[in-house]
Length: 103
Image (cartoon, rainbow, N blue to C red; front, side, top):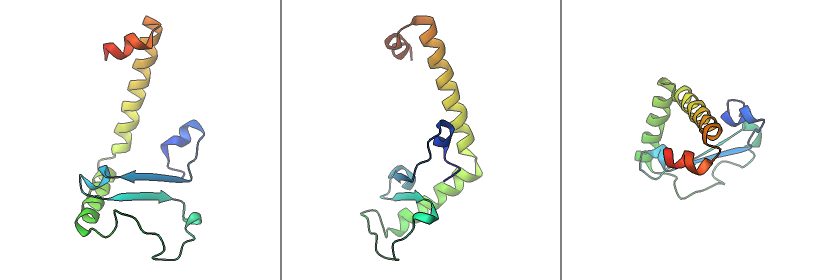
């Protein structure tokens, strides 16, 4: 999973679990992992969010939208903005409680 955003911090996860929100409110869970970890025979793994065709179509549409709109770039920019604001606030007030209250 070299595209993982956590690699920025020197962490490379083995597995990412994404549930519910990816299905737009419909029951859907996603397990993302490296193909090298895929050692289970087909049909071996089951979950409570599998087999719902409407949820699967919704999830596929959500992933297409995320890819087309490059939402990962927006998420990165917002994360950097939040981090910068947090650092700035802590320097100015020397209190994270005051930063949290300031919003």
